[in-house]
Image 1: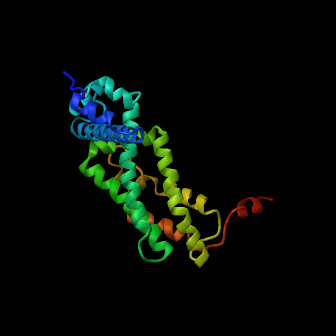
Image 2: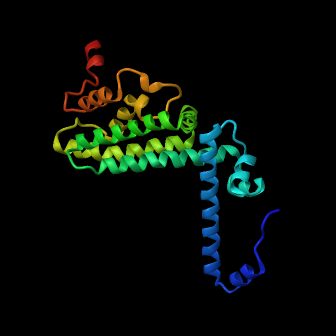
Image 3: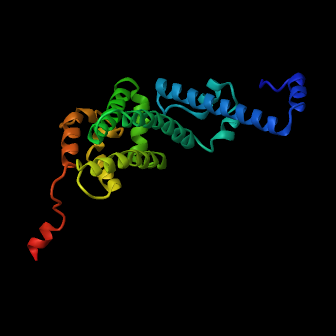
Length: 228
């Protein structure tokens, strides 16, 4: 049986002003949403996203399935919210790394190293959650593409600062950030299987990519000029 508001609660609510009732409703919705996400993450850890049903989530939250659907249109939307939550944790840590002391090159290394480490840790300790993020990445879910754009937005100003110092080659900072992430893709995105066993390892790739950003003469057009 689902518990409804008591008469006393209804009386207290009737005494609230309209803005206060709105704030109370928003707070209740936020708490319900947080409960659903945390329950889902817990279930995914235990049995994986593939075996978890909306009914399982509802039972864990002491809600009806219909109440879950008030917040999410489908199980896929729940999965997207979980992936967003997991990637937000990665982005927060990467943002903290971006503010470390040192040169722009040092900060780039710190960001890449942080992102790589977090994916490795999740793969080792939360494999079922890692698998969901990997599935989302391989399928190009919008939430993952948005995360990549945010990371590019984090890296681009650091690259610009390095260009201003003469440490990094000229060119579009956003393009260089995209190239950097593409080169580091095996280490800075969740991959299915033991992708972290690939060689070269993350430290070798960071060293290679950062050195590649250094001031060298651009080779664009040289090949085509030689063919003319």
